[in-house]
Amino acid sequence: MERHFGIWLAATALGVGASACSGERTSEAAAIGESRTLADVALPVSINETMVALVTYASEPLWLDAYEPPETEAEWRNAEYYAYQVAVGGKLIQIAGDGPHDAAWVAESDWIAMADEMSAAGMDALDAAKARDVAALGRAGDRLVAACEACHIEYKPDLPSMGIYKSPDYPPRN
Ligand code: HEC
Image (cartoon, rainbow, N blue to C red; front, top):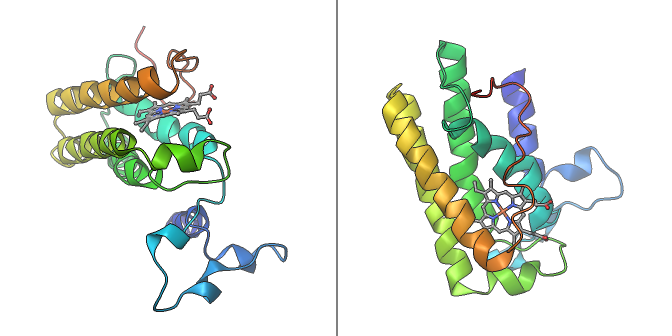
């Protein structure tokens, strides 16, 4: 059941399959043809919304300066899923959505490089989570936060949300 829900979410994030649930949205699947390229793909929401609902949500629990490390099998499995989301999220934010600056941002080569760095840090976290290695997860989390900050310093200088932890299901470090 959870698995099906996850697949549904992933499909919605890519803008396909949404028509099954909403009559107003057309399915991009209809447009798939030989000439279709990545440039024809758009996020169904803004990059900012993707940051809040996906990137921050998944990355916070992986940052062990702020959160208790996973202990149980279920927590480790969640850490794996969050790491996947961060790794994929670093690629998703290379696709513009409907935010006013999205198209300009994703056209910048340094944006792409910094998003790739975020994705790579997510893969480090995935390796660490699969190995159930708290120290390695800590290092991956530090690399991840450095990747967030590098891009925010350049593209979102006031860092407004970086100190706010929103993931409700993880115990914060005191
Ligand atoms: C490649 C650049 C880039 C990377 C990497 C990046 N961000 Fe962002 N982020 C932005 C930009 C630009 C915005 C502002 C978007 C807007 O205002 O439309 C943003 C917005 C946000 C917001 C919403 C801020 C608000 O005021 O609503 C949060 C939270 C956030 N990012 C967290 C993160 C975290 C956590 C990471 C790392 C895991 C990260 N970001 C990685 C560029 C980046």
